Image 1: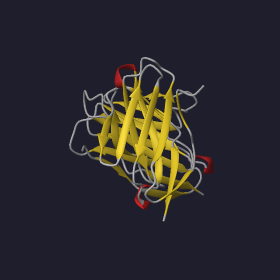
Image 2 (image 1 turned 90 degrees about the vertical axis):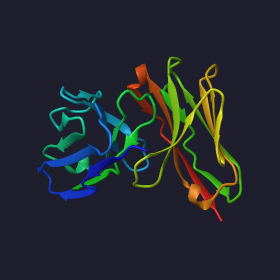
Image 3 (image 1 turned 180 degrees about the horizontal axis):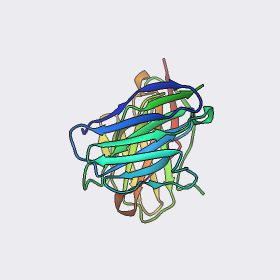
Image 4 (image 1 turned 60 degrees about the vertical axis):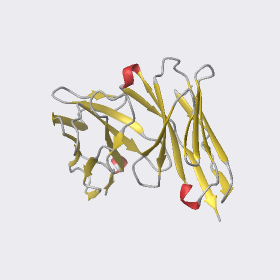
Length: 116
Length: 110
């Protein structure tokens, strides 16, 4: 199957700092990527849909100025958590669907963010 | 009402048991359906797609009932390694809106 690489796999930072998470499609072009957040024992919550070359579409309740998304190429999307606070601590996962495929999603391995 | 609903479990079963998970979805225009498996602190991995005709992959059988808007997953001869959370996933709106169920937790014990 298609491979999606996500980096870093975990990060610990101080409150107030910004953290950037990268999501790369390694063997296919992804015009659309998705960013999720998952709290312990809860399901994935879609945060935003990242579209190559255009602005991301954010889900209701997700602050676009807090979670900056950039999808500058067909193989890379980044999520920047700005001015992180302890309540932003969570498991962040990206996913991508191969171009034109209405099938399943391929996920990155996730990033565990801990804000002290 | 949630767009995709699953019984959260947990299901505690002995090795070798058969276990079934159910999932209902609210959007009748939903186009494609999947079961994913997620281990603790790991990314979800596609287990299988779900078709109206029903499909089987080894010990796993998935079924879709469009009339009842219902999806099922049957696991036969459960293994310890089957312990995980199983996510029901539905694609809507031309495939670009993916809805995840909250997941059903399965524990298989020796």
